[in-house]
Image (cartoon, rainbow, N blue to C red; front, side):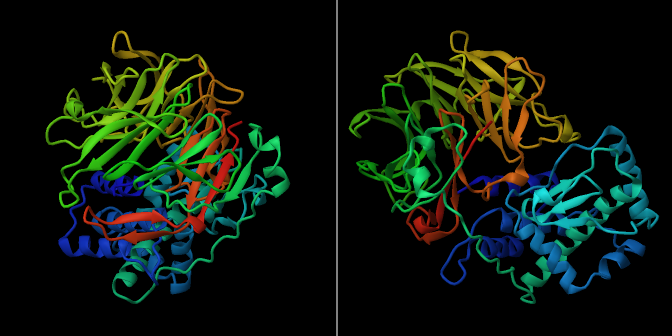
Length: 527
């Protein structure tokens, strides 16, 4: 299974042109996939630690090897290195984030101070302030919240000392990651044992009332059902649809339990994406394996099931997939006319370097158009959904520039089915400090759109210059990395947080099943 953590890891490795020796590759597989004490914990904590270790161990520019800087790093004791290491390990988000972007003057001074730090031994006199909750930061100095890897900057321009504290912190953290991973690989240290965070569920009185349907109502609901979740959850009109291997459950909004909706697939099946039409029909994009002994020979199709779980039709997608390529769909939606849109990889019409395109079919499965672009990139993990105006929108960005990754422009565009092209494009709508693609596009409760990405939950109105971050990463209710997510019609984002998985050895490869009693659903208002 290639999930987001794996894509992030190898994207980071590609940026540094890392070539992994076979022995290191084997060690990675062992660290990431080997269950400990019969349990399996897969999330960004290990993948980020590993990615950082790979980059630092293989990049010649990561840490100075001589001089005062080397001495400063080596002066850290084991306890201090473990502290830095644990800060990354408990991170819910998977990347650094900030309460505000750097000012232009700070960026310029940061470059100068970085050189002075590395080459002239210009070190800060103090250290960052470490906080345990975002509310502890009172707007003075520079602080860091380890749980969400969040830096907090004052409103006024930071001093040289404050910028040096940031530089020093990052160097010490990177060095600690490198050294701790070396010790773990040598058997001289262990991955930290982190106590499970106690979950405070929403009270029963709220769950039994109409408050669960309010767009402003936050909900925390430990799952009591039996389904072992795979990668997909989707929002229906008044319910959630949850996919496991070979089965789909449905669960009422605000409920903690789910019931079987459909499992009559007839062969090994994995559900990749789902959505519900206005008439109640549920569309499921899926893979199937006619031969369990041949993982490569799989078929891709869309199955349509009515609101009562009765199979209506199957739409074969194999004719749209290029020979030798693996078709894949991660997001899908249906417009008011009943047209089906799938964000799809492996299409015949894709050009070299194009990750995916939008396949549009009518309700019977007939091809309407395929939308791609030579100028903009569609992303498989990017959002796709119907806006308040009834048009279908998708996330796009300019092609990645390896010489200047900061130039990536995150935008949304409506789709013109008649012309088979992008229609209205709303350029560069994300705040300056947003770096991760938009993963969900849906109607907001009080805005044209609500988005979600690892940089937070955002709202946006067409024509506005910039989206607004309404739930920053340091307010994440759970581990966003690895959580399954979808957007409700009321503008709330639902996260299914997977606290633990079990590994199943299967003829088609290892499978990772969410442990039901370790799964929790979070409803977060996008307002």
